[in-house]
Image 1: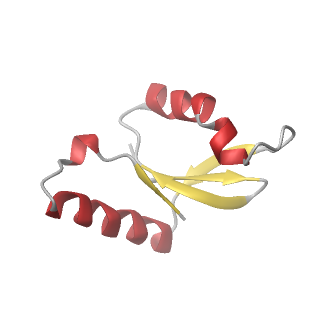
Image 2: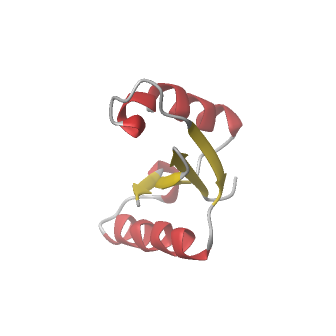
Length: 79
């Protein structure tokens, strides 16, 4: 999948690259409390990442790979 930006109340919070739609849905469901900061009526949406957000994700991936991690295990980075 593409690098995806998760937005909370239209504010970009996290750039992720899920393996598939099921992984994205699971992250949105399980990470809702983390993403919303505990605000019960927060609106969580997603869209394709823009160039700046994708570059930040790529930079974090490069750091992850530098210490010996692999791309399959890397999910995302806070914005």
